[in-house]
Image 1: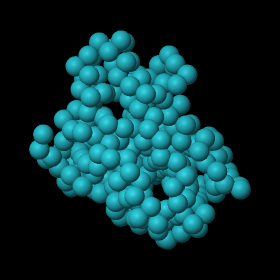
Image 2 (image 1 turned 60 degrees about the horizontal axis):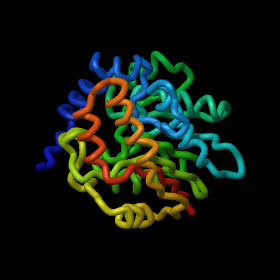
Image 3 (image 1 turned 135 degrees about the horizontal axis):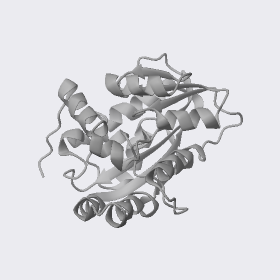
Length: 249
């Protein structure tokens, strides 16, 4: 299918319409989460699976001391940033999103977290500003993933970590062809890891967790929500669901 990326305000409007729609809110139990979840331990709800996926990211943090400044890039409605703040209670947590509406929601729900409207590929922070950057299931939307990696490298201090989940897709019909730049349509994991190291990072992990993430989500869609066509389409479109940990030397 032809990639039909929508940019600028049109992209934000469609992104908001998708995430803030009544149907999407209901699907996620009005939790404010928006990811496919981690189904390793057979969570009973989609909300619990989403929470578990964020924790799966945080379990990869490997530093001599807890991070002090943490960024959630592509923070959605702020639920992931809330989980991060719970794990690292003494850290200054920042969440960024290109949507003003979604940031406004996050600010209302999560007092004490620093939410800002910002493009993850053109971050307006000083260089070497963060100890840790987390991004949950957002990088394939960024225009482009390469620009995000390059920018994240600059914004991390030496020794800092970037931990993020991402998808490799063989087509974009089911995730929204308007939302994925053509440059992000990498289909080979080796090419993907080379993109990460080309930004300057050391590769600690790049694991395909499709079985416990997107497949579990699709089983939930089929068995609980009776959305069989959507489940089959998503499952067949995703080549790999990658959980990656990178370190800045």
